[in-house]
Image 1 (cartoon, rainbow over the protein chains, first blue to last red):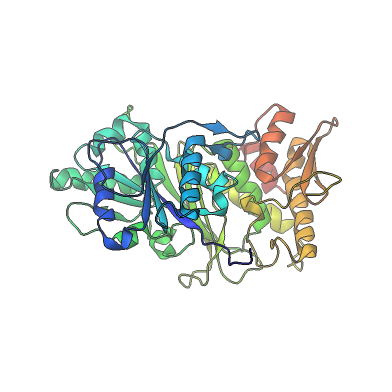
Image 2 (image 1 turned 90 degrees about the horizontal axis):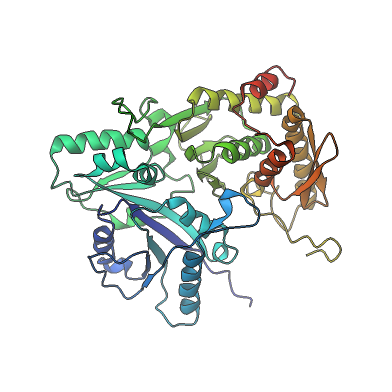
Length: 346
Length: 109
């Protein structure tokens, strides 16, 4: 008692479709001496062994908490595995790790994993979400995106994308795949695993949710909105697009919360990502918001504006939702709050 | 926890988080938190009016959602609000609903 509160241990999720090189990437990262204090939880042992002293295995079971709210989905065995690791660390049974990496199965939906970390009443006091790294196989990636909706979702929720096996794929195949990945998720930085050095520090950095680097993904820098489903192939599952919105007037935080909770309650499955900075009425610096489907991370106050633009700017990655309807709805809600709101209140 | 009402400590929903420094601090500035709750109830009611429902603060810890016919439900935060509203209404509350947006735009919301 009386000691400073322990730091939150960041959890990085490594996801990607079957055979996309998740374990190989992990092997590469964990070889670096600076990452020796990383614990790893792995869903299934593949053919490639990870020679790491902090390696645990988890199995999947899912629990939805009583509230019935989808953002409270907890994967009980994942939760138990992380708590067990934490307990062992506290008792000195395992080396004191400073970060935790979870490698999910290739077929896993990343959302329940993120939800578990943020919702579990014990975990959320000791751990925080780092970032989601998604590996995409350059050779088979296009086919997987065509056939497997899970792989599209894994790309959409990524904070970092790593294109693997680029040395085995034709340059044109890689180019088309990158173009498609950019349509699904224009915000995440992309590494080409085989062609360039991977900066492990940047890959595992915990900056995905705090608004740092906002200039990278702000709407002004995004390609024009268009669906990722560009070839008219009805078998494709990725009618997913990035929608960039901006609001000139400062936002009433309360009304924004009402609007976003309502949108995510009804359309959380279609809103794969929301990320942005808000000019909140009464706040001098912007507030960074970041959500994955039904789950919204605690907003953070950024220390400064990333540029001279003082508008609120939001990027949504949506599936089967009309961008115009989202924009009109947000503006209507914002208008409602300002009309009925006494200007001198804040 | 309050011994009388059995309500556990403050909410940790994201809408209760650090939107503006001071307002949502858990253990200080109670007046600002109270004022913010009142503002939240008023803002939610501007939307709920469209569905014939009202929201009221309950003990500074939860909210009571009521229909015009007197059905009520206690909700913890804004996220749970919409699930409860849909249960009581037996129809979806969709912010992309054309009719709702048109009413808000016309100032009737």
